[in-house]
Length: 441
Length: 131
Image 1 (cartoon, rainbow over the protein chains, first blue to last red):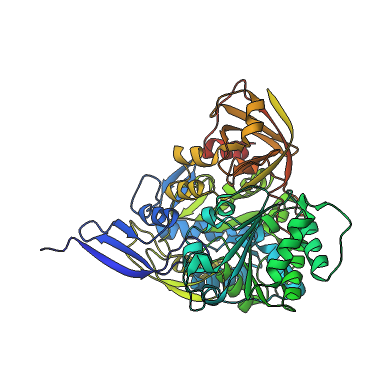
Image 2: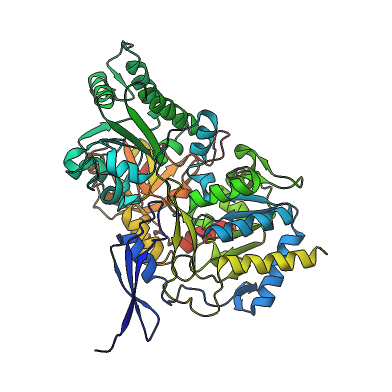
């Protein structure tokens, strides 16, 4: 029989922070297109299929001329992009969470040369978690430890059924582990959320908390843990009896984990929510082993934080305008900068702030020249002045990515990129070279 | 009909995730993220059919989205819009000094749309470019 497809095994999925490393991808030998994805979740599978050529995939560099995108050579596109960056007073380099670590490192280099602001998507999602961890530390573990040992799992403000579809089956719920030989039956799952989410629907205990009142509930749990009696009937909409029951469950577990998501970081109290959650976990360690893990969204946002930190000392929201890195999230984070209309040019790498920033910030982003390094048409790239088409990391080029528990894994190349696409790293290297040339270095 | 004193939450859904990977400029993305999910009892008060476009209004903006009944209820008083261009017309850009906007827990009201249509991602974000 003649082989029609080649199969690439043990592929790391470049979608969410779970970074599943067991995908099998079939690529058609004749067309070099993905024809089958095994083991992936719905979203990961779709990402592989959408890497095939389509009417919304970029294959050539584009420059906006007279309001229309026109195809140009790489040299012309890089020259135009470098012009924009060199002539800007306060350029912003944003994104980096959906690409690999080598490209992120090049992003840091470019930001330093340009005296720019460097930020990654943590600034709109788990930034408050990073602030809290810097404030009070954190007890962490790898997902493998959780799989083998954890018997009490709390999902707080996080809905993995939707956001991290294979998390439950690979690490935290249904999976059998060394000390959890009966899988789901050996674990007690608690979900805290204002909505009775699909994750809550398969949990053992659901706690319905009022929106934006997580802080009060965590403090009440901490008080009860210390033996205080609270003279109220309910806290944050949760009856006192239910909180007591939860405290007993937490104290009597062998190994507990709090997985927390945007429900804590994007509500009013932001990092103060995470501060108290970490302190709760610390105090629970007086009784039993407890740890917490942020449910990171982009597959390599953890990598972006790690790479930025080892290069500059800071994980996100870094300002190079004085020639050395400074860090102050409320001041140098992308949305705050855009709201103050400080940014006068932006380079977006592997991200779509047009879709994901609040409208008022997007309006200011669009006022100034915009460069997008992007494989697909997005509400950011369509309105960009320069579009640099890129090979998708983890599908069309190799690299390293960090899982949500900061375990680095190697991304694989399963097929070639269509058209003239280059990798993020190559594009940033060419930009660095051109920028240096224009700055006379 | 209209509903006042609602709390807007935003976040990931699996169909929104699939749609954004499948193409952000596609109609599929509108169906996945250009929607507002209601608690079943709240929705009865709106007195309209599921799928009817509704206007969601907050202190920060307003947007037209399709209505739908939540599979993740009951959550009386709470409406949910998947993260994306539609939700971001409504969220509070203030981060209270920490850098991360307040994407969840925003006061909102909803009325059944009398006119207008639900825009796709490019039409919606394009208005910000022109403005």
